[in-house]
Image: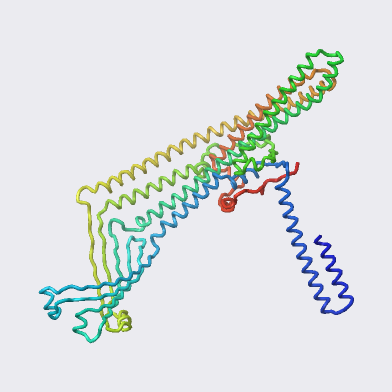
Length: 560
């Protein structure tokens, strides 16, 4: 429809060119044709892309071929737990910013109006011209900035403006108002308790360490998530292989049952053989249904990891396509694995950060035991005039300069029990964290050695299973040939099929155990994210937080 309309437009324009034969119109028409073509191409591409998107979502049945690499990357992007952990890391960053806000200057401003009216006492009469009463009106406005510096000092800079009228001014002056202005800088610097950058920034440093700990916790959970994903992937692979074996046996049995029925009806074989064959087919169907159910169960667990609804994707069938055999672990020196674990394992790094955090707490608690000794001081410039502008101008002069300086001291009267107990607790927590770190280091080494031994053992076991499975598969093919030539019965063939599936179950169970143990070793040495090319810092989690329904991007799909 779009291109037919374009054809009509082009035809009409060409007739106009032939009739008028003018160069300007020719150039104009060519420009219009080019614009229309580009517009049509853009809309056609957009229309095609939208159609493909709709088709993808509307397929009634779909097979999604999965390799473990892509699946792991999608799970880490979409998983609800991973997104929550990411949000926690962002909250930690915001806490650091909040603690750093202690150095942000604060703007202050106020306005006060004061009315004083009172009778003069006997003493007041002599200073206030023997008047019976005294009144005063004051309007005061101030504004300024206040803040803190890294040494622990607090500062305050203010401009103060006053307008005053009183009975004394009326009596002694020939004007109604006096204006006085002042600029004042105040400073209070701790010398013992609360002194120094380390003490002032203690909460900032603690918040930064907590942020790093949350980041390492996120990495740790991401690694564990990858390991769980790998385990479920190979469970899906095993369930589908078992289901495929049962379906193959069932197909052979169903194709043979008709021949057995005919032979039983013709009296060539006993009727009991037909009954046995029918019973075997029923058992095979039951096993096939059970295998399919297990595959669907594992698939739904993967949907949970992918943070998608199984009901929404009920017509999707995931197919694991990776080959579990041949991809074996090359074990290097065990001490090298332990070294890698100490460098990269997030849990060990978290324990190190906890020791660092508790040492900061000790340093802060030790400072709080000290007495409070502060230097306080202020400087100010002042002015006074009957004219507001003159008073404001004179405040910048140093004719009326004021200053003050002093010290403040305070100390608990008795034993300072609160501060000393806090210090003792902080020291014990450091020791506690160091013991935990040392124990974790030893257990990590032992765990790595155990995992290496388990990987080697399962790897050798799987190699033997792989060789045995190939032999059994060849033997089963021979039995199929015998059955087709009539040398064995269906019952004998199905017994061989059952033995093969039983052995296949053992092999696939070994595959799952080996892959899980392999993944847990990679988690322990901190290499599993690198193995699957995952960098959590490069993932756009914000997109997945805002998205209400995740799409299928990243999964290679094929219409069934």
